[in-house]
Image (tube, protein in one colour):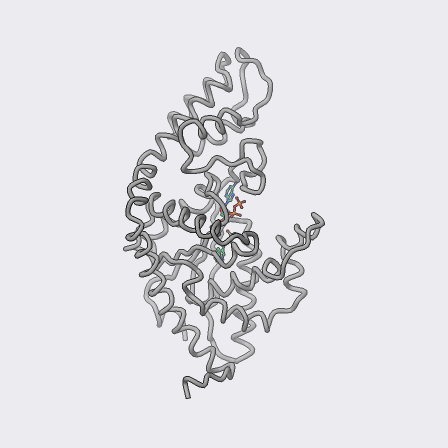
Length: 335
Ligand code: ADP
Ligand code: TRP
């Protein structure tokens, strides 16, 4: 069965873990592409809350992160009429497929996993959930017969594992049960630096969160690390963390204008930070307002997930059914 026989539009799928407040690295590196691509095909976007369990073991916290991420996406422009937006845990077929894929996965393949290897190298003791994380991610993708998976460069290995596992299952049962997704690595997305100049990441506590505002946002922006060039001296915009962020938010003309000021001298890092703060506030102003409105109508928000979950389950079930049958898994209630 070819994919195009089943669904006329390409299926686009991506997920994000609700394991902390989302930051501007997440926005420019992932969310913005998801929101733009909702117009380009049959898009499925989900909250990877099973994946979050590999690092969050406080139920109340996971629930609140999940709620935050749903609000963030909707406020930033994800339109539930254009895409299927849901929680991973609303589609139990995902873990069912993950088990079957796991039974075809050599341990050595998981041992090469970058995240797993990193944890081991740091002397940590990773859990089995983290070890098999790429198998669950493969199931996320394959259970909807996804064609395109927009992700950042850091997810490349997981997509390759996914393609590999789809091929293994198809070969094992000698049928095209799963669609092998094309790689879709989001290009031209610079790694967004955090306030300390390293990659912005919640694990480094160097983030500027999308929905921070007022004093707390100002404090973060003002603490971006810069070198010690004196106010009156010329500065190099291309090696400055503040300018790297300005670049993301400013229109071309504004950006060039600020770059000229850097090079002329007499423009301090404090001035640059003020410019950045204004740019961030303007950029997210309408999303912040929308988020506050949405927060007042959580019934609507949960309905979005409910409807999305139902649509996703329906698709997942249609993919899972032939797999159950061909793998010989007995189900007494189907007899
Ligand atoms: P974190 O490092 O904060 O835990 P995640 O690993 O959960 O973030 O990333 C979620 C998504 O956001 C991924 O698709 C990743 O590519 C993207 N992303 C995260 N941090 C950055 C960054 N600093 N620059 C660009 N993209 C990022
Ligand atoms: N691993 C992804 C991340 O950390 C999240 C994720 C889980 C995902 N399942 C997925 C992304 C399936 C794309 C497709 O960003």
